Length: 101
Image (cartoon, rainbow, N blue to C red; front, side, top):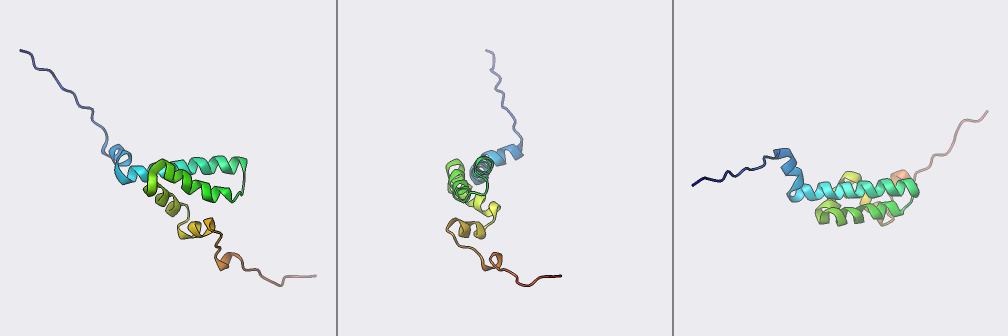
C-alpha cells in the first residue's frame, strides 16, 4: 500500500506574526485608519471629521486593539484630546510685538 505524502506550506515567521493575534489586529486597524485618513484628506482637507473617522475606521478594521494602536501611532493622548475638542494651551499661545520701520 502506498503512503500519501502530505505537504505543508512553510510561511515566514515574520508574516505569521503580522497576520495573527493582537499585532495583526493593530496592523489592520492602523491600515484602515491610514486609508480613511488619506481619502478624507484628499476630499475634505483639514476637516475635523478626519480626527473622529480615523479611530472609528481603525476599530472597524482591527477591533479595540486596532483603534488603540491607531490612536497611539497617530499622536497619542493629544489625538484623543483633539477628538473631544480639548486643545493644549501651548498651541494657542500668541506672541505680541514685532519689528516696525
